[in-house]
Image (cartoon, rainbow, N blue to C red; front, top):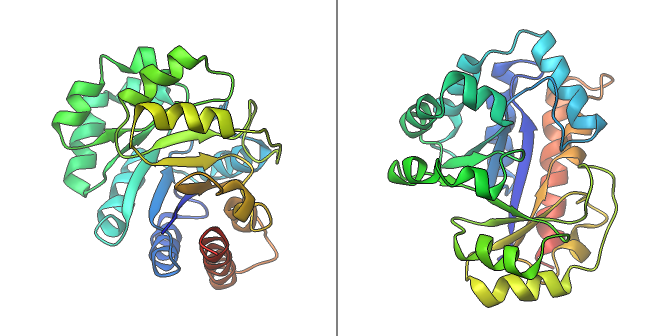
Length: 246
């Protein structure tokens, strides 16, 4: 069965809501949850996730909220922390590793930490039983794809196009996927531009999809109450999970 990875912004509109939403998404079929760490300059994300990041920060998000939320939800769903390197660097990656292991979190996604620069940190992360998810882009050379794929753990994050999340663009990734398969049996999940309408097509030839902006748009809809947001996001998760396994 193909897997569904879902991104949500931690602490928006508040930490208690994030816990309730995460548990509902687990029940709706989400296999892995990316808890986004709000940051003021999310360079790989589009305006939707950027807006949610800023709103969470304005509402008073602190890293302690991430740790509190994670301890409550990680027992119920495979959980990763998704964030930019700045917070990891300033607080100390060792501290994040310790907190993640204590909470039951299984790893990190750090989109602005390139594979080459991540190498010094990987042994510490993996010794704690955690994974650092690697990215492969359609612009990567065959040699770089081979290098990243051979070192991959948990899953590979295949970027659907060169750009920011949520723009809905697409590229022919068949040759890139074939190259990855030559070097690893690690699952390949495709991210960027996955919606209920595109999920079935984007899931072709890969092992799962990663969805962020489509869920966060609902989070940002101020016409909806908390219960309505959770219900709508859960329904979308079920729809996508069914589509990718149809």
